[in-house]
Image 1 (cartoon, one colour):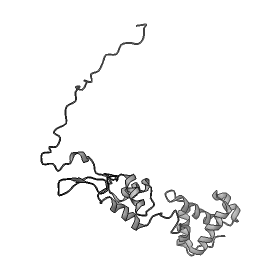
Image 2 (cartoon, helix red, strand yellow):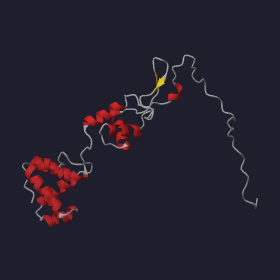
Image 3 (cartoon, one colour):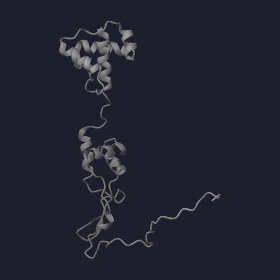
Image 4 (cartoon, helix red, strand yellow):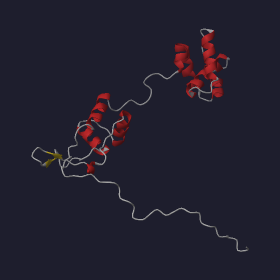
Length: 197
């Protein structure tokens, strides 16, 4: 059975939580288990009224008896642990700032050169995941995407074809007009569909 409340304040908080509508459902259930136990029934009866099994009731009653109201919450460390460390996440984010190994760059001798011609010319999620794997970080493309989105990092350049170091290069002018003018939208008269008219 649940121990009696330490004071009226603890009892009031637990009863309010047990009847709450806008609190986490797991907290409400656990507080309800305690309040049902205060009414006197044994664990199987409390479990039936709370809609859970007896093992769950026993666990939360023991936690409440040992820790009070704080014992009804989840302990830290619940859930799946991160597979990669914070340092590895930082290294993945730092990769985006590096020049991709396959990107052609102008050398002082006015020749184009890439560090690795077989490497990716732009960072993509697959390229970043492969480079992280080469560094010893086991990570998939979807996880790389989540990491970069969480950090607010863009992982690719957009419109690389409009950049040039050529002195005579002129950017594209205004957009060309469409070859076919837009069709006017006028209301068309409806023909009667009833043949009796």
